[in-house]
Length: 210
Image (tube, rainbow, N blue to C red):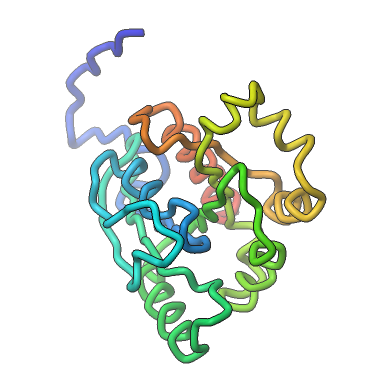
């Protein structure tokens, strides 16, 4: 469908969702090779984070980009794979500390990026690792972003079918996150998938303000 032209809005009468002047921090987390950086680029609508298909980590430092999405000021933070068991704990602590510094200044939401058709052993205890790094409240602040949505399409499945039939361990992870999840296809610049994610983000930040 054609997008209607948005009427010009007076910048002083800002129709921003959420609270004006608040920047929501989106922290992209996940294991190497799940498509974190690619998802970050889809969310931003531009190729900002270095992203290429690779099983070894391409992202080695926390990076962040600020933008506005669906009327919300967003700070998108891309992180290295802090779930890598081979990572020295001193290095992991440094990344976690840097990550916390980047989102200290405002509401934050964790976006846990997972590959829809590949659930690995390393991901089974990913919520425990997350809680260990960032504290127990991560549960109420995590949205799962499944990449490779086209894999489901090819199998003739929708997200609901997938969630219904996925492995028990993955179901447990989803339950811990209040079943908040979205499906992404990173080679499609489809704003609807980003809007869905932002709807979830707004919901989480509003719940946390109560």
